[in-house]
Image 1: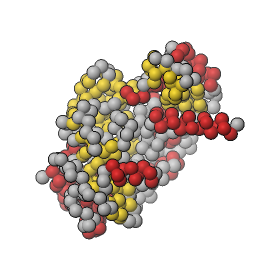
Image 2: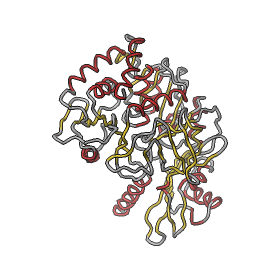
Image 3: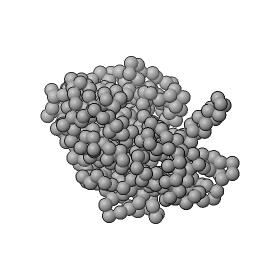
Image 4: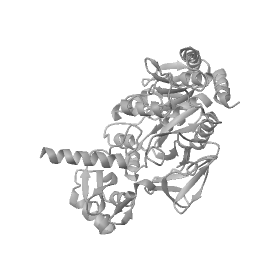
Length: 462
């Protein structure tokens, strides 16, 4: 039965590891044994008893050890779980509550109930909704069943060789598709222990990786960059696997991290609509920008048009809500909004279709400019985006992270050496770090808006 899929795996894990540590704190102490998760599950079932089957319950509980018990109990009650981050702005949270007609909101210390009629789902009913901007930039939900989550979990664990003996370090948000599939589901499906971490300061992360005795470290490019910049930190010997997802991994970040800790970062490419897509299994360190490896186990990736891909397999979600978009997601097939380059060694992400910038009638993808900038010695990472222009439709702006020897003239001249004149950014900003969000992503459209606003504020104060 579909709604008992995870339960059947969990029962086996519980039988084998009942009194062993399942969830650890940052200092390595046990927060939950597997038996304690099962007991907490019963407590959650009682707390959630007021919600009829089919109700949507938004979970804003953060990286807390109560997640596995809450999830199992919610599915016992046949509820539709909607993970969100607790740091979400109130206006965004309210938008999501309205979007999915939520009957409840579960937070760290309370459960709120809303008097709203539940959604009358067309079959098959989802077990979980992932909130995403999809390919449109407008928030919407992805309809996910347990079978999709199970397939994705098994694909990830098989491709990355993550086993029951491993300890996953959970610093990325559990509510994000990346964190949920790499941290929460492996615990329930195969008993891979989990460390709950909430302190994202680089030095604290290094300390907690050591004290928790974690072996697998999934993180984002922003965190790996910060860790690689620490001159006196060390990576504990127990860490055997570092995984990066959420945004493309710049080669300079990867090189810096390896030079500092002698650990390769393995790029992972996925999406809320289907989970994992590709993974860099190799030990090769000198990779091209945007390289994400080969398709992960049991996922079929085929060409779609000239520079797009189509993903199919049992991990692909049923569709979007409230407005379906079968051309993008449906029927076991998903077309990501990424521009992809194929090679013998694997896939390389060039950028997003929606990020193309129109400069006086000529179109360029920001990744072309970013790739040129990364060739300049001293540049660690960069993000390029478009802003409105009164005379050219759009202009390019580049934010650059690098050494203190860089200046605007060096960056501009380097771009002119390798790009067409119209492709050279009109503005360069040298920054300490790129503006990644909590999920390790950069939204160029949002960055463009914030850049315009900051420019106006700066002008008004002068």
